Length: 279
Image 1 (tube, rainbow, N blue to C red):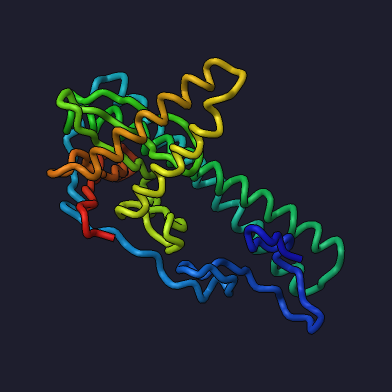
Image 2 (cartoon, rainbow, N blue to C red; image 1 turned 120 degrees about the vertical axis):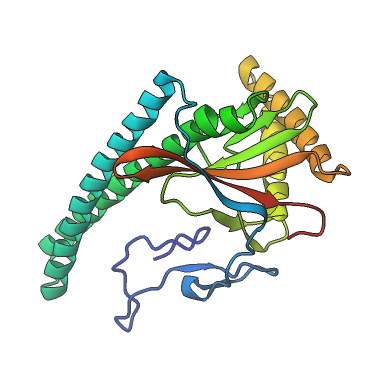
């Protein structure tokens, strides 16, 4: 019934021997790890801030090319949201039909509608991530830190920072780029606690992921993979040194695009507090 490593249900309609729906389970979010109902997982440790939700609405500093790209992202996101609304409505109808009559055909229709909704939701998420990445690089960083150089970013997937920038003096700005309606992500940190993006433990955990990934790939037969692994390992070391420096030599920020009246309207920037002693 369950995928033991993740706690995911193979089917949301799976029932136990008593006819009750099988709940989603998750690890408890604190050491020692134990499986419990997902609804009972304690909330993740939340970040502290140096500055929170600073809004920057001047879009005149954007190049015509980047402004056009950001406006197109707004339109593309709007189209994806419209498709998601339709998929949700279709899923609700399929749920109602199956609830009224639990036939194999209605179950098949419900599962098909669920798959369509999941795909539509993923598209909205993917567009939001791309929108956030472009906003961070083309607007926020260009405006706030024009002297900084992008040293890592643009790679999809978990267990990595969205963007890492280096200043001429060797200090860093690490960016978590979010979509307009996205929240900070959460995960289990290296101590076993559940933590949010923006916390010091989350930052440290990503560094450990970077090192682990580089160790796994540094002996690859592919030269480009080996070189990338060596660069990632060196960057992880540099970020770790910056994190533990006195004073701290890395800023950790999140950037989120603003959309107003179906048009690009700037961005919201928050700077996390990851000083020593912070969670």
